Image (cartoon, rainbow, N blue to C red; front, side):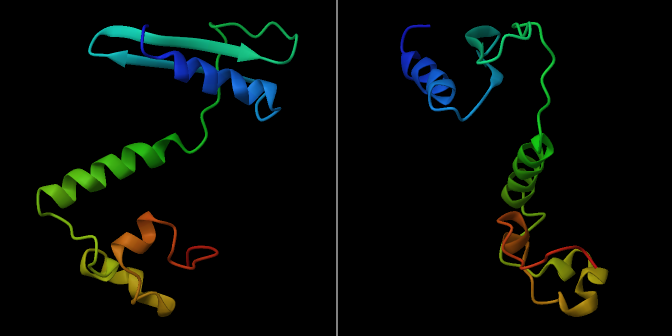
Length: 112
């Protein structure tokens, strides 16, 4: 689509710079497919119909939902997590705020 040339340039740069070996991207504006790119630096039959693993994709959905909850007043970014999940405070985690969890700044190497 006209006006999306920078997306194609950025996408292909990942292969030129050795940052990716195969990937796909598609973007819709309403019902219209405006970007449909795939690429690979391997010769293993990868096409636009190949299945693609997407790691950590749930984080995007969780972030959107958290933003909606804040916007509707169900949640506050600066509130302690224990306001919503009292057991979270076990093992010295009571000082951690919702915003810290969302930004991965809770200093938690693992959940306990």
